[in-house]
Length: 274
Image 1 (cartoon, helix red, strand yellow):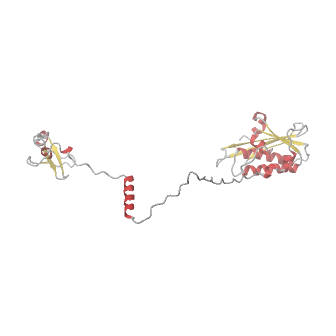
Image 2 (cartoon, rainbow, N blue to C red):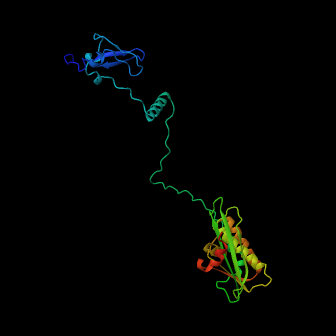
Image 3 (tube, one colour):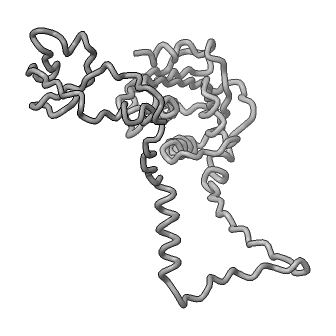
């Protein structure tokens, strides 16, 4: 486009020698009496003569014909290119053989399913204390109620408390006890089991042997596991269950175990409060 006039013919080029850069100035800038100072270093700019070639005067649309920047390869393209180069360099290698595909007429045999070994709790099902277990209590039996609590259940700094209340056949209080739960991992269930265990120890320490014993509590887990309706999965609770059953078997008496609402177990609940 030689006949196209330049859009910036009135501009002059100025050069800053300390910064080594060139600037475009308008007439009101390069005709200033004191000269033009560089905004970066503060030195005076040297206005170049008009005869110096100007890219705007050579080609006003130079910015449209500038070369495109080089395109950088992405990580995926580099990986693909290296893979192709490696295939081209390796020669004489046998092709990769695919595994034989089964024919439609052939039947694929299913893989054998591994047999799971189920650990049965033989001691929990066949404990001799369950031979004297009865579904309903009879008149003249003693009553043992228990309860347990825990703050921060299962945490590192958990604290628990257990309690029990023992009564004779006339509902007269024989023994009452409570204490802090001592265990490696303190939970609410551990505190409940400790309440049953200490209550049975109180029964065993009495000089008078009762005709039978009724164990009541507001924990469905403890009542169901102790009576054999549920299985015990955790080892720390299984150990406490076996200790309670061994004490019942050593007393050699008839017993029953039943669940009661929390409202009927308020006395033991107060014993376990901090």
